[in-house]
Length: 302
Image (cartoon, rainbow, N blue to C red; front, side, top):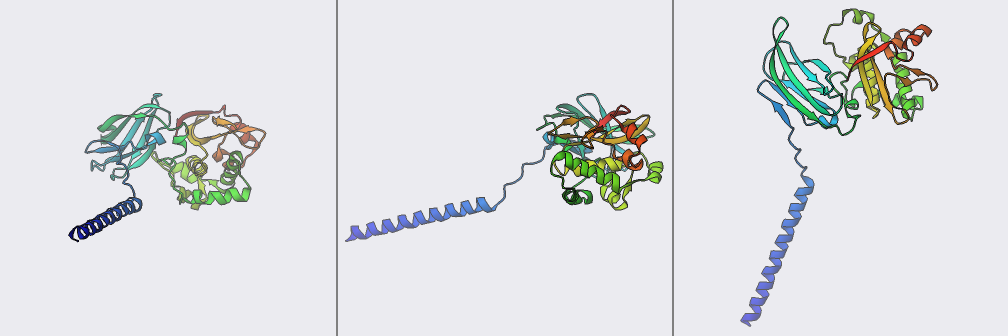
């Protein structure tokens, strides 16, 4: 009798123990499912004056912040693997800004500099960033300081409706629709062009509301609209004749990279220069000048 009762007790204890283990396993599984995974920490190099976030180098950009407290003019200089030197103004408010790594794989030298007196600058930080892009298009699909947009930026938010009204489904048709919308809906701001200062950056919502802008505004807006549609686009800065100028170049699966030109009317190759086309109302003389791009010399890609 005693042995039988003990056996029942043991079986009961075993059952309770198994139930407890099952409940614990369910709780652990529930916690695993309901609790989001912690994001990997950002990779940051720098010092007490400047921070460089290198987390997104494979996506074609770095984020840089000056945190040294000075209110003096601050600049960042990025030297590409090809030897091109890109110089940017950088805010001195401690906020990260995004800068493109636009010349492919390799080692980029990145420096942050603070103005001391006159044209002299003191190095706040200088280092190297090794870059291996996930693909060649990555820098030209992302937002950056020169092409600054989100999905809420007005021109970007309006793009799907613009394409829908144009019946544009293929990339070439999308490019044509965006191009025609920009050159037809915006005017060249001569007053702004005459007064613009070095270091100017387009604020796309402001340009959108004003319905006018300079070459930098046109190129930045069109680039943002195309990138939002996953169409690689480069904002190009260089010379049109002897004039410092901005335009764009794009990529499609049908054409590959079309450097400085794009198939605009389905028959002729025209430079994607929305500023000249808009301000010149696509006159014969303007379109002849745009022509095949021989009058243009690219210097920087953003």
